[in-house]
Length: 231
Image 1 (cartoon, rainbow, N blue to C red):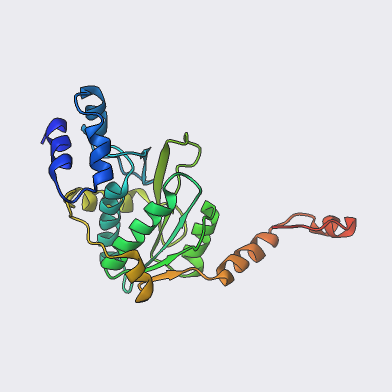
Image 2: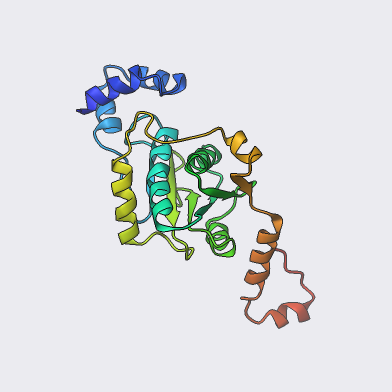
């Protein structure tokens, strides 16, 4: 299917919400813009996904996030017994939305989800993966990229970014997931209510801060100066 046919399919398929279709209708006739959005799928590598937020296969949106998460779910379900995944997100546009979409797909695939109640930096995701003994982790962020970007980084059970071998498996899984309603999903609220989606407790945050404080250098000088260190 060419980029024009894919564009038309997104407009016609009931799987896509009206806001997405309205955004696509607004570029009708703009072949350059349509091609940029649909000529390829957003690339998945060791760092996961990263792209401009918007409608299209080459953009960051809930449908691309769902498809990528289905690929990850297929990987962890095969690689781990009783798999679980931690999720964190930053203050970028739609980070919270993408995080909840990922959680809903994982929960629909029988994977236990641990998600922060509010935005957190990337190190908090890595720590949660190890502290909660998760099979993988997802961080919704685009790091240093401009504001119009967002991203989806995947971490392994060691709290580090996914290895090249694992990323290749996840990519193959993603490519086998049909874009049109190929990802399993449930209501986020239902997932929370029935315990498939769990909020990461304050105790994990406190534990992280305690561990960070232990890494200080010459903290005795800070104490002797009478200064108060605030984390």
